Image (cartoon, rainbow, N blue to C red; front, side, top):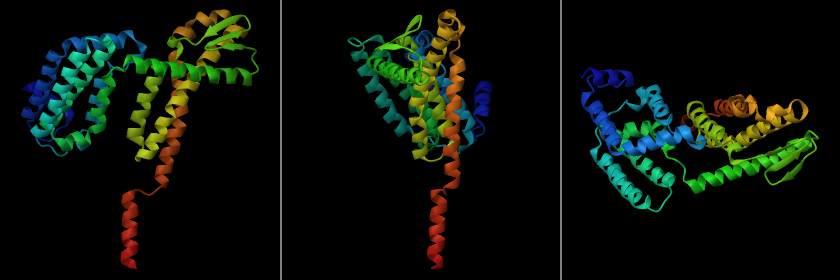
Length: 315
């Protein structure tokens, strides 16, 4: 009982004891852990072993933090919604059955992705059932962020990595030409004075690109109001991610050519990724500030309607 009251206090829920709703959600989470225990372990292992899925382990913490940060708005109106919860539960059963059948012929990652979708839908069903459709709608961003736990299918991830490599190769060649660095390019391979480099899948920048994508989502949610400006911000994520990767490759390669060849296998290459990630965040901030500034100068829809109504009544 004390634990339930503590959780309710942390979430800032308005119904004083909150034991029934909290107990229902905790039971849902515990039941999902029992059903999907194997998949949960696989997801954590995948997140720790593969850079392309590094966000998986942190996603539940991020969504919980978002719910806590916006708890007053999310839990302003609470109501049980068993019908909506049952509808989501039906989707869980359907997705789980498809996953069981599909996993026999699919790759482990693809089968795990369907199971992860089932698990997240199970959590959403519990939340909607015990807190209501209105609370789910108010917390839609935090709840939908849970789908970041779903691993991308192998074929889709391969295409994304290929696109990042291709973009990096094109922009890297342009940068070398701009800096008047002599080079020869053969696909993803570059021959520079004294060294040869290649943009391998591991050098595509997929991990930092995902981090920048998640950062962009959070920034758009907290600092931008309109969907159009949120979309514009997210559209800048891909070119910034590619540009960051190009700057990283160019910096390491040019230091190797003109300063010391050991830079090619040194600390900056293997451990210095966070330095360039900070650079990419720095490139995203001015765009965010510009979009936020443009929103402040543009009247909201409510103000426009109020102004129109005032002018109409005056006429």
